[in-house]
Amino acid sequence: MISQSRVTILVKASPQPSKKHNETVCCAGIDDRGQWKRLFPIRFRQLSGEKAFSRWDIVQCQHSAPTTDSRKESCRVHEETIEIVGKVKRDVEKSSIVDKSIVSSEKEAISNGASLAVIRPTNVDLKWIRRSSDELDIARQSYIQQAAQLSLLDKELEAYQPCPFEFKMHYQDGSGPHKKTCADWETAATFYKLSREMEEHAVLEHLRNTYCEQYVKKGLVFALGNMQKRPQTWQLLGIFPVEATKQGSLW
Image (cartoon, rainbow, N blue to C red; front, side, top):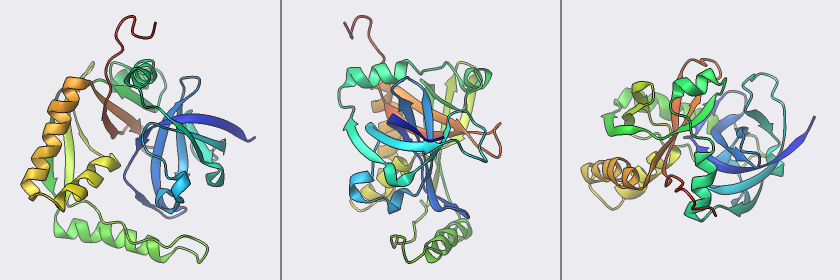
């Protein structure tokens, strides 16, 4: 059965090679009923300009039930039906969308049978590890192989360049301390953009200041999601600021 949803995008993770779908991106958001939707497979770098959505875009699309993914939020998207129909711009609207879905911890999300969640972390610290040349070569070859396998009908892509650093967030939620690798596409994209203008160490400190100070002051939010093949493993898929809803602010 084919369904249709309008989804406010909150998650756009880094591209990952896929044997079945070429290069895919984990995208997810909240629909008009306040329910999570995981949109897959999205070959994001092959989407044309009018379909290439960003966080806070409102996307309308048709989808079917997936055949190999039992997570309740997952939808098999009919990629050709993707349409950007709006954008959430006002802070009060962003707060309303997020705060209705906030849970205290990853543990609470699991107890609710969820595979996606947003939390408000505390005591955050961004750390990074330089990836070895061997790790980068292996990752780079995976993307090169994916690009080479595209059919003549697919849009030609340059092989995606993996980030030279692995970013890790240390934080606490309602169940205790955690450490997770950051899979948010915007983090790697920001690193590459700023690296054209700034020294590497300055870029890294800029990211730390942005996430751990500026975002914290406004209201830091993490989007988390588990893995299909290893559902006990949760990943950090999105990092962004949203003010907490103030009492009476919507009335």
